[in-house]
Length: 483
Image (cartoon, rainbow, N blue to C red):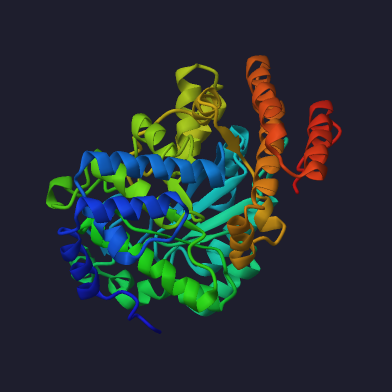
């Protein structure tokens, strides 16, 4: 495998030279970005390094314009689903670290169905399947069984239509199995592209092999998975180094496979059981983090950007304006956590019979989330606020089911035609959500935002078809429409 696309000295030299970029050159780079032109590595490095408040404000402005132009008001919704916290790796930043002493758990298929049922009751249609790396307890066959079970699980009007998978780097053969199981995006965080730091924080286990991890997306692409999602854990190494690493990795995939990252996730290191946050000297403050998100949006305008509930309410709200296009809602990062949380709520409301309570209360909880959730609002609260802020919560999974993946998706995005697909599908799935899970007040709000957005569908045929389908959804004569 070719690993020369991440050159530590090249990145360090870029960042060193960027310190000497003058205001005039940075302004020229921002003017280029504002016109939609691609920036060079040196120009991106200079944006990362600038501390000039006027430049930073301009970065925010341009990132917001790009976000609005390409993604409109749409925000894709998803939830993580943890199925196992068994892990053979010893990662210094993770609560699932093999050296940590806690009660491990892997979901049975019945327990998995209960988790999915609760997620379907929240209205979710898209999940990110998460698991630690431990072949004995959580083999690829177990993951495949989970995928099959989730796709088959239907509760009332609920169904999961897309499963993205975030599991450890694996073999081409196993990626072929995931492809055949009809996953959506394969997600893997490099954690850090800075190899000395990578070696330091990965103490033992298969994940300690930097190159095996780095080349995982090549193996996935070779196996036919053309939607891959990258990311780093900001706070492990110099965050600017890792931004450049992400962009160079994306370029490598574009050159070799004609398509780069479908999504980039931007998790930020936060407290977790068994680790001391003070042991990490490269923690990223809020202002730096916001600048990073905006610069990534400028650098890769057509790549989706994902933000989890690691971030608090205020930060999530801010970053939606700067580039984030997907967020999780109502998340739980424990194995079996959704069922346990539902049980706790039922006990608190005294609505659980003693027989059921006794049965469920005997079920053990790990009480060991992978990370501490900082936005604990319910899914419906988050969705309500998005609408109040004039965003369109989207439950769309149409591109995957319609075969618009990899370079086919990117060609639509870069041509601008994606708006004639994403906006109608967002509106139809929001209408579906409102009819299935909303009260009268919520339905009125969604009706208003849908009516306001429909005129923005440029294609007349698609616009009329969208209106027809929304009418059918309202009248109960159909559902799961997409274009």
